[in-house]
Image (cartoon, rainbow, N blue to C red; front, side):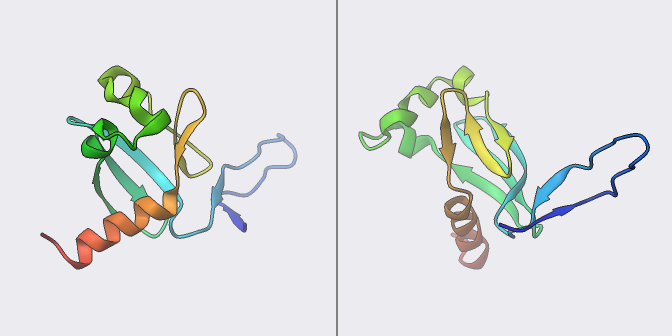
Length: 108
């Protein structure tokens, strides 16, 4: 995957710039919202909310069922443009991207 830097390396000081994955569907920012929702902003500026409440409560949630606990859900963080939680849980950013784009294009 290609990456881009948002700053130049300063050789003398040894400062290394932040690396931002270049894919449009990589996530730049994530925030939790009440009710097991995530607000997400992607590299291309697309942003919106994803409601995970039904999925987390379903029998198909598997390892994600631990996130029903709001305290665990709020431990979300970004790692290389991917939404992650402790314990190795992560969600595919391209799936979240498609979910948000579909809502933008066909609002309910």
